[in-house]
Image (cartoon, rainbow, N blue to C red; front, top):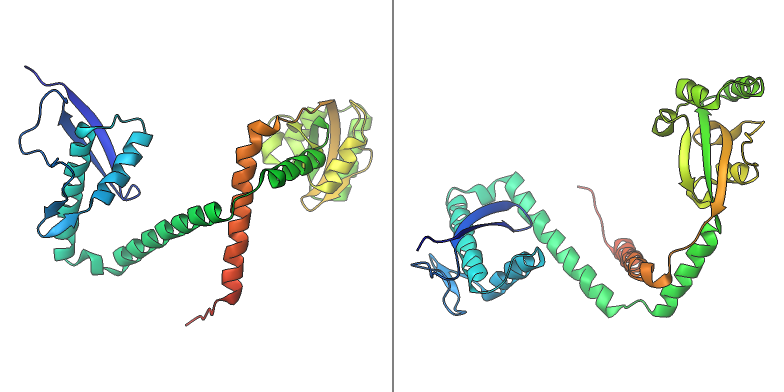
Length: 276
């Protein structure tokens, strides 16, 4: 019977080495399979731990590959190949190369850092009351309205005054934005910034924008750290915040990262750091 064949791509060691394996359908056991009922595989005297197999198995299952003996054989075969390659590389002294050694050490540090961050989050859980307070704070900061505006950004106040004078004479705002605005992110679109809450913008810009009426532009240049703006308000609409349950986990992740960053900062402040 002709065997079905399936391609599975296994990215091992954080993507440092990708190996593609063709393996047989579960209906047919491959001769010399590396699956051996949970016993550790030993390659040239070096064991491949069951923990290592489990780590890769879980990673592949999380990517949608079906589990079971077939996947286990594929994982073990790939780990054997990876170990053989790394053993050969070590024989040739590649692990002693400064660039390779630095990369190996960096990868180790990154893995340990992720592990510590995961443990820290488990040991310092964020309560629902903290999440709810953060949600309410965000709602308050964002406000109840969002604005559609366009602007022209120039370097000097004199340039801005000149553009305002042209607009008062009936010049086309979008045309001037395309020709004169320094904001390359919006100038091609006639200066349009899309819908956004005032908190999205720097304070001076936001304050000027919310005080405009629909269709009105600022009659004086608005100065920010970016330069001088002429702002026109296009429209205003109610801003409906997403339900708490829809954003709860995102808020939790943000608070966990914030807490971990604070812990790292404390470590930094206590550390003895020297520049040789």
